[in-house]
Length: 98
Image (tube, rainbow, N blue to C red; front, side, top):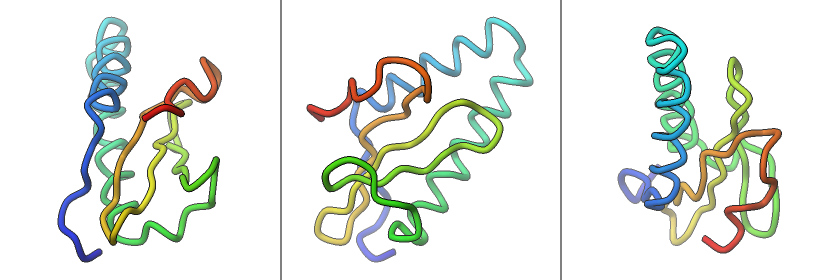
């Protein structure tokens, strides 16, 4: 996608770190698998952001396959903005103010 690498909201980075730490406390390999899947998700979003379904407002969401998380993002001026790495069953919409 034109526009270079996605912009990632600082709190989305915090979301990903918290999830990684939670998985790491249980199993390092699972934590690594989570991060690998998240990296792949961001690559796929970057390559074709409109491929993923609309979500709330002007956002879209990418569901991770092996983990109960999704990536919330939007396009602004041909650049992807990652707003959250959200757990699918906890605190719905907590990221809406981002």
